[in-house]
Structure formats: structure tokens, C-alpha cells
Image (cartoon, rainbow, N blue to C red):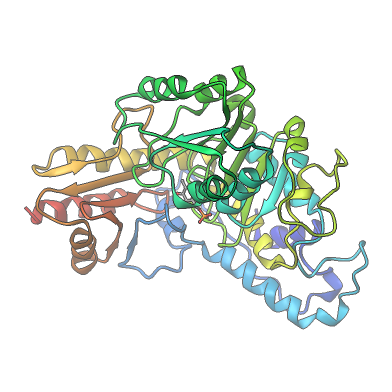
Length: 422
Ligand SMILES: Cc1ncc(COP(=O)(O)O)c(C=O)c1O
């Protein structure tokens, strides 16, 4: 989408102050090369503010926000300041803050990313917030059991642990293997752990440390058969692998679009299936916490007071950016790059891949190490030798996320350094 069109579209959806209020000149339109252009990926890399010569492989923590997305956020914030005296609170006029209105248009734009309906989406602030809404919002009695893996991110584990300590639910952290051999092994662990007291299952779509793609469809089948609430933590999934909440069959799905979807931090998306919404209390409350009108849907779960509306403009622009690159093209490139890394590491003596290599479990997160080299040291060597940023995730491993703005050459440089460390 051309930049001018983008601005028009955000104005149309009510995020941008009315055209008559805009004082700053519209940012330059994006001139996209054709995807078949041999320089297409180099051009995409050029849309980042990361200086040439630095390589960023830590998308699993925080995506690199493209410049056009940042520009949209910054221009919008500035515009808000210039025109703040025009803000009259009338519903037909733009809202200068987020956190109060239903944001119907943006929710309608987000919903297809999940194959959901707009009323099933709540705009929250990150995946942790979404998990908290579910973990605190469903009715549970002392002794009720909740299942998860033994490899949860703290943001997905903490909310349930709090409830365990405060209200006596029983949290079972199931060992799924590091890494699991295949999807069957994971499904068996969950099938064996379900008891008549199991009330909820919460698993990641992709685990944080090793990047295990979980067999969520099959776990959902287990949950549905016993009417167990099933939440998927998709913090690492959106913008990375396809998400189809209907095909998965989950009750709720929480995500952090500031990672692989490249939105500015401060955006989160929570899906709650229409017929399950009545089972989730709002646990962060403002005016509409008790609004059970079906057309407002998950709006009850976005009642957190004043927030920065420019970040929503950034989410909108990030969706456009990724859609312009193309989700299929992104997924293909992510896998090409991670496969190149995995197969290169497999050829290096003393290199060890801790992430799964089973094709059904593998994704764009490759966690690896070198015998005799500590994780933090490996991270520092990659940075000091060639300014390659990976993240050390424990004393033996680094996590390398291969996103579409990375290149085969950057993977090869990583492998050269690994060899040189022998
Ligand atoms: C699997 C998983 N879940 C949850 C989170 C928490 O995400 P956030 O801090 O955006 O809420 C992360 C963050 O890395 C994660 O990897």
C-alpha cells in the first residue's frame, strides 16, 4: 500500500486525526519493488533502521520495527500534540487516546490474521496481558487442575502460578522433552495427564527457548472432548507461522505482535471464541467491563484506561508492511533461512542444536551451542567478531531467530564464526 494510501486508510479507520487537523506533511509513499526483483530482500532489509554491518537475529525477543512503521507512529504522535486542542471527545471525531473506544475497524483488520471474527478480538498490550485475562478470568475452584508444559515463558506461567498460590488451583508442568522426538510424544504426555479435575490447558504455539512448534490442533481435540478450556500462547507465532484459531479449535489465543509481526511494543492481541466469552470475567475493569452485548464481544477485555493510540497506528502499519511482503513469502523465507542454519550447524563438529529438527516441530527459532563454549561467550563472540546479535538463553545455548529481513549470507557468516571457534 502506498504511504499516502496508508495515511488515508488510518484516517478512514479513525486512528488518525481528521484530515483537516493534520498539520504535518504526509510521509513519503513507500515505493515497493516487485517481489520478483532480485534486490527485493535487500530492499526489505534497507527498510530497517539497524545500521548496515549489524545483523539482527533476536526477533523472538523483539522484532525490528521497519522505518515506515516507526515513521507512522512518530508522525501520529506529533500530530496528536499539534492538534490536541481539537480533541472534543465526540464519537464521530477521532479519538486521541486508546483504551476507551471499541476500535472496531482495527479489530476487523486484525481478525483475518487469526481467521476470527472482529468481535472475538481484544486489543491488549502483549501476550502476558492476554494470558492474565484468561488465567484470572475463568472460574476455577481449589483443586482444579491446569496443564501446561515444563517450558513456558514466565509471561505464560506466572498468571497461573499466582492463582495457584492465591486460590489453590493445581498447576501441572508436563515434561515434553528438550526437544521432543515428534508431535506424538507431546500429545501422549497431555493425554495421560488429563484427569476429571482438569479444567484448563494452556500451551505455547511455539515455545520460547527452543522454538518447539506444539501440536495444538491435537491438544485442542483432547481438551474439547472433556470441555476443558484451551488457551494457546501465540506470542512467538503471529507473523511467523500461520494462525487459524478455527482450525486449531482453541477457546482463546494470545499474541505479541511486537515480535514477528514487527509492530511497535505495546500492542497485544487476544482472541476469545464467541461462545466462550461468557466464561471469561473481565479482570481489568473500566466503564464497559460488564458489557456482554454480543456485538461488542471481547471489548469487555480491553478496558485498561488511557493508552497510546499511536501504537495502534503502528500495529496497523506493521500489518500492511508484512502483508505487502506477503505472509506465504515470509514463512517460506523464514524456513529457508532456519533450514540453512540447522543444516550448516549439523556439519560442524561440536556444534549442537537444541531446537527440534523434526519438520513438524521446527520453525524460525534455532537454539544451538558449541561444546566447550558457554552461551554468553558465544553470544559475545558473534557480536565482537561480526556484529551478529543472537541471544544467549542459558549457559550453553544461544537462540537465533531467522526472520525475513535476514539473509543467507548472514547465516553463512554465523556458521563461519562457529567453525572458527573450534
Ligand atoms: C512463548 C512466549 N510466551 C509469552 C511471552 C511473553 O511475551 P510478552 O512479554 O510480549 O507478553 C514470550 C516472550 O518472549 C514468549 O516467548
